[in-house]
Length: 128
Image (cartoon, rainbow, N blue to C red; front, side, top):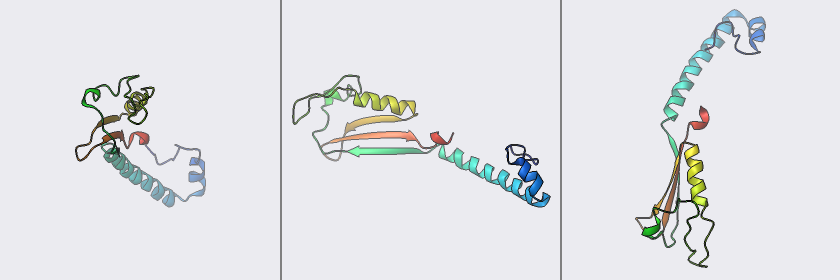
C-alpha cells in the first residue's frame, strides 16, 4: 500500500523534496485510486482464457486412437508415407499447457472431415 510519505521507492526523496505538498497529496491519491482500479481489472481478467483452435481437413483421428494420442511415444502412421513420428509432440504440448494452468484437447471435427486441436491458457496468469 502506498503511504503519504512515499517511502516505497527510491524516488521518494524526489517526491518529498521537489513536489509541493498539495501536488504530492494529489499524486498519491491518484496512485491509490488507479491501483485499486487496476486490481479490479486484474481480478476480472483472472476469469478470462486465451483459446487457440486449430482445424484441419485431413483424415481425422481413428476412434481407437483418440484415447491414446497424448500418451508418450504413441504415433499413428502418416497417411502419405506410412512413417510414424516420435509420438512426443502432443504429450509435450499437454504437459506445457498444464504447467501454465491450461489444457490441450484434440478431437475429430463434427462439421466435416478433419481434426480440431484446442489450446486453452489462462490469460491473466502472466499478470500475477
